[in-house]
Length: 213
Ligand SMILES: C[S@@+](CC[C@H](N)C(=O)[O-])C[C@H]1O[C@@H](n2cnc3c(N)ncnc32)[C@H](O)[C@@H]1O
Image 1 (cartoon, helix red, strand yellow):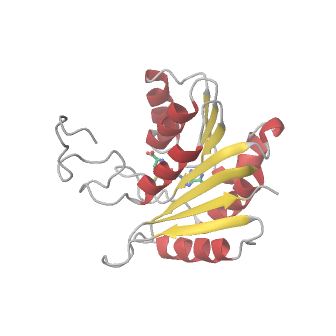
Image 2 (cartoon, rainbow, N blue to C red; image 1 turned 120 degrees about the horizontal axis):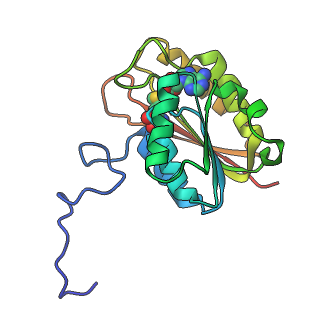
């Protein structure tokens, strides 16, 4: 360290991927941190739950103009908002925002990219500020994460932010946990980022790394 430089205040200078309180990353923050570490310009990636497009834009910025991004959402308003956000940021050409459930990912992605995706991000639950009855559903979520693993490249990363606090969220969380624990360790490394000293049902982040064979 050079001593002639002002030292930054470790409390007031908030890390970029801190939670809203400035503390440890949220479930999505962990996803972003790990994807930032591993994605490179030119990579092909999927945002499985586009919502307002924040995560899609985050992915598009990481993979850049040479990369490819596919984003999915079942809500038309989410698709339109995500397209608007991407176009405004100059990523309209490299990203396809698909108005369909993520469980159709395999059919919707060009075959040339099957097994070639470097990152796939799920941010489950409902879209804050919109209709809370439109949530991800356990059955389709499980179909989608299973096909996501097939579509992932060797060395690719799948992240799943899970919100057990809303109606149906606890069941989705339980079944994602069972699915994740059942993945063969020869092929997949799985980790869980979970706040453990908070009130009930904190959001959690599952991360699956597909081992190269
Ligand atoms: C927590 S929000 C996503 C937030 C978003 N990533 C962002 O950056 O704003 C969850 C989204 O999942 C969408 N969703 C629900 N079921 C879905 C499905 N089967 N396939 C794709 N998206 C779905 C909802 O419409 C909602 O927009």
